Every structure is written in C-alpha cells, then in structure tokens.
Image (cartoon, rainbow, N blue to C red; front, side):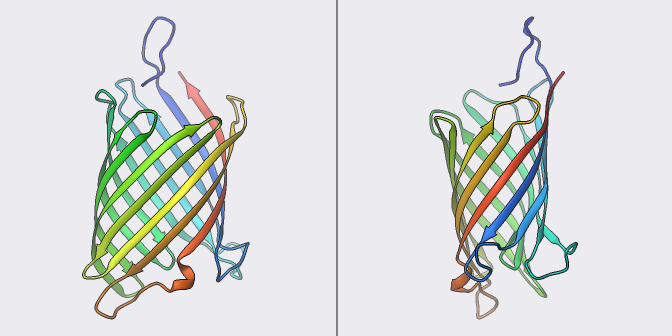
Length: 223
C-alpha cells in the first residue's frame, strides 16, 4: 500500500533507477551485449501508479556509441483491491534479433508467494517481416531473506508460429541506504521464436542467455 505520514495522510512516492546489464550467451561469450537505461515510477495519493522504463543495447564489436532499443515500457498500475493489483502495459521488447510490440493486462495476487497472470496482444517484427502476436504470461515471486526471486514465462503465437520467453531472476540489495540503494541481479532465460510457414525462426544457439545486472536507485523521494 501507499506510505503514510504520522497523521495517516497518504504520501506520493517516486523512484528512479539506473539499470546496467551484461548478456552472456553462446554466440558472444561471457561478455555479450551490454544494456543500459532508466526505470522510474510515480505513485499518486490515491495509490494509482505509473511506471516506465527505457533500455538501450550495445552489441559487441560495434562502434562504441552505437546502440539499439532493447526495451521500452510504460505501465499503469491501479489501486490494490484486497490482495489484488491490476496493471495495463504498453511494451516494446527485443528478443534476439526481433521485436514484440504489445499491449497487455496483468493481474497479481499478493501474498507470501505472489502470483500473476497476464494477456498480451500486438505484433512481432524482424527486418521486413511481421506477424500478429498473442500470448499469455504466468509469473511468481517470493522474498527469501535478503534475496527476491521471480520467475515468469510468456508463451505466445506469431501468426501460425510460436514464441517462448521463460526465465528466473534473483535480486540482492548490497547496500541499505535510502539515498542510494544498490541491487545486483542475475537471471537465466530460455527463449525462442518462429514466424511459422517457413519464415524466420531463432537458432538453437540463441536459446539460453545469462543476464547479470546492476541497479542503482538514484532517489526514493517521499513528499
């Protein structure tokens, strides 16, 4: 729920996070694509919240300042209803060398183990190819001492083909300081896509990826 002052009034909350990451995969080795960007959120007095993220990716062996879009996302989070929350999301996301451009809704039931179910629809594009996308995402998260574990799997179809992106991620806060908390993350993903009917498909060597990340909270303002 929202933070409160001593007299019980709801406070607004803001957050701004710098996200840095490295993707290790068989084609590129230990030091693969490097990602960087920002994530932020704002919570209003009525607990309605907006969250957004913008991440760029730099490929190995390319000019130093050359990058492409990795992920852009904006989410509207509605006030909690009991132990449930509802999110509405617009999301553009890269997977290997293709993009999904999606709108979706997600319902989360909060608890000792939080469970979420989402539905997404939109398009998938790769170079001069495109197809209609529809998919369902299942997720779960649980805090274990100082480590937060989360798992999610997005299964979908691109026209008559298929899409799969499943992974598990852990986050550990290294430094407890309200002005600059730092979190390290580690994730493993299994992913594949196929546009169907003999069109573009991912290769087996791109199926697994390890992602190491560093998140720096520039500010957590309460006013």
